[in-house]
Length: 453
Length: 179
Image (cartoon, rainbow over all chains, first blue to last red; front, side, top):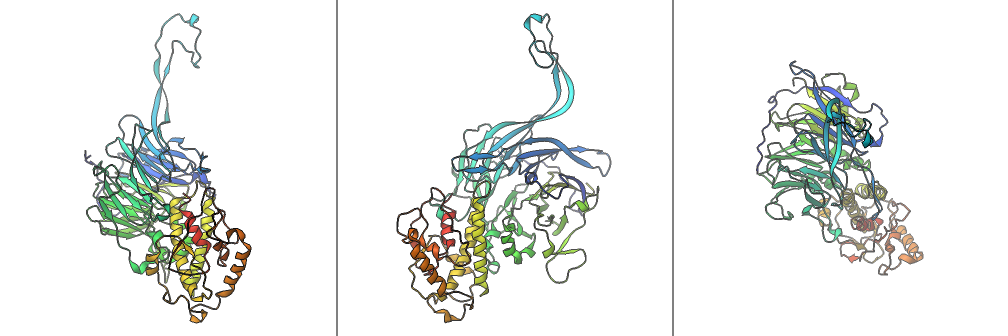
């Protein structure tokens, strides 16, 4: 079936003025590796914001709206729940450690009072239930208050326990563990619009799961060659179409995207559509293959477009046109001449994500020096902003930044050589309805909102 | 020549990255290893094609892996054509800092001592002997085979006859099948 997306549209177009709202995480410059944020995701209403980190923990923030009546109300996100999702494991057969780092979090649409999310590390996906408890039973007939059972001989009457209010407690419990289905490292999970299934993708295979069933999954894509020496590309990301439950896409390290229809056959090795842009021969270098590898693919909310992120650019594709993207935005073209250095310091392998705003008019992605970029598709404008502690006074308006690629550096511009490549923004998320964004630096989560929200 | 020097440097950097990735937490990453091997192949092709000009001794064909190298050769800008593989060093393209002969002779000497690796056709779990003829920029420590890895049959190709079969070529063979 097709789900119709009914989305409250934010204020159309206009100048966005981004203000600092909050920053979460330690102020320390000395970053503990476990605190490195590895994924950020709003839930479907935007009320909850989840982060995963390298230490296997999930932290969920909840939006508390201070005063909706005021024209410039501030919505604050405060910690709602924290839990250890994954632990480090050891694969004894291969003598390999399995990292506990959370690669992706995806929320399920809410069906009842509880919230559900999927979180995954390299090998195992878990379904977590996050529920609130604000009442507790008191006055058991057979038990003492501390839980010990009473001596039956002392019980003379009958009383029914009553529920009394208590301080809100948020509990996270693992409801399903989907394990042992991936030989390679999981890079993506995506919940289907049918609310029953989801996919998980590793370097060479994509599996389809039923949310209720953990001991079985269907393999729907397998690109492993018979002889591994013939391997030329791997799967880098995968996502279900937001409205059509039979359609999904997966991107590759060669810069191609394949759209597959699960109605066509059980094994979707043959794509329905192949999206690929021919390479510009003048840009050929030792590193052409690396920089054309797609690090993220995201459908637009309306399901008509998809966006891909490779090392230097963001591309918007119309699902009806396979031979080239409809829009291409350069994120940091000034890095093209620095690819050799970026290869040496490993930055060229960084996997940047990208995201759409609620009405698909603006896209956002991260860069280095704690810069992040926004591209307004309608107004054909782009903006570079910085997430830093220096610009973190409450409601402080962020000043647009500019990188000087060469020649004379103007005042307030930053030269390419001064960029800090250790400060990278890989993960960003946009509130599904409002102009509120969550931007993750190495170990801090910044929340910005549009001044006139 | 600049391209050759850059190719050598990239090759050296790539190999050290490959070694480092073996001890990485979470195990070898297939995607990263694949990208590394692609860069190494490009760099190696440039490096070998420029070293061909210096080849004096008729070394037996090196064992190249079966992977496609054609597209890379066509598109990478080479300063000189690949049409004269056996020209002596007087081709004037090579800078004087290259070590054409001494390196090869030295490696031949090493080969004589390296009994385990002398014959590539010997059925053995050790690496092929050509590793001893490694170019000068490679780390001196030879990599161990992973447990369970087998030596793959060398497929002779007609593309080039470089005497220095580098560790890079072996590493490329090892990177992906190790998974």
